[in-house]
Image (cartoon, rainbow, N blue to C red; front, side, top):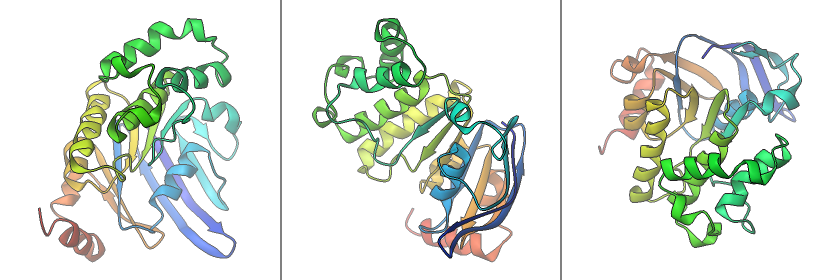
Length: 241
């Protein structure tokens, strides 16, 4: 994965959410974005997905220039996993996944069966394929959301705090599924508050606070932070581990 961010500014009305952030990362598979709530992490991820426009600067992911590329075409190459799974409640697990392939990628349902069932089996969900979201656990629904993102064979996966609404047991099963992404050499960027997991899974850490990228680097920065902001953040989140 190649990620180049140059002085990107994002505002909502007059409120600055990301303040001319810059970042250059190359030859990595997994990037973890960490930081306090409200610092701009999820907004940054939405910009990387092409879900929102920015107000200044430029973003390039691999060979995609998000200021110049056709964003509709780019979005078809990106798998996105939301905090709350975002499954359609009136559709089965299978149909939730197939619908994206049908509507966005013009693949009829009959051509999707083997692909979807293979992914559902890989992520321990095949027996639940005909159930509706309310009939499965939150962890299973989030894993179904991961499968839906994978079904399009994305160039890159973006995961926005995928365990934030889950209890510890369900969090564990979702994290195991995300670990499987790494084991399968998938490129992905994850916003997470699970610092121990980030340390285990990531090739590169990005710490965002107060609308800025304060520090970034290999996972070593979690053991030896260079900035006072990251040190204070880690002291707080790791105090009771």
